[in-house]
Length: 165
Ligand SMILES: [Zn+2]
Image (cartoon, rainbow, N blue to C red; front, side, top):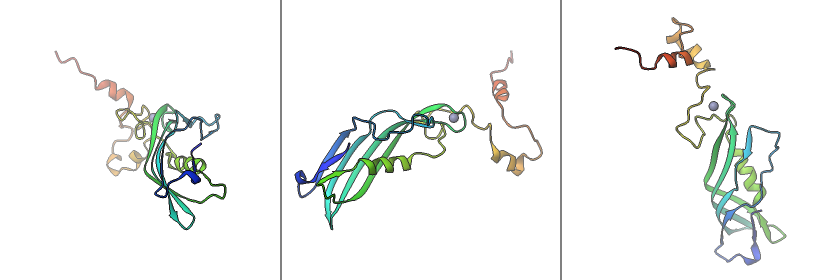
């Protein structure tokens, strides 16, 4: 839980940073497309901006495991929300709980159709399914005269060094 006790907050605001000890996302374990890979890190400055509004600004870092929609392989993905900003109504309880808002903001930023070669933390990664379902190729006029001549895994094997000697 990420909370601020407003009665302890100085006039110029308070810096809160750390990691969540519990999983705040509580994703459905049956959902294999996305799972939490570690604690959420937060570094936020919370201040009173007047009019019963509070502002949290800073950064969030959240590690996930996503499943590629093309090759169906899991891959590591770390979401960085920086700069992150959210405003909150001053709670009557005197304790501001940022958890639910942060949870929603992070989930909204996750890629809806993740590709292991685009969002992967390992930027060198190539999706094994790349080009396999390439709809764009069919519609490219230049390819019309040689149908079925697209690159395939076998072509890649043919690309190995040839015996020239
Ligand atoms: Zn992939």
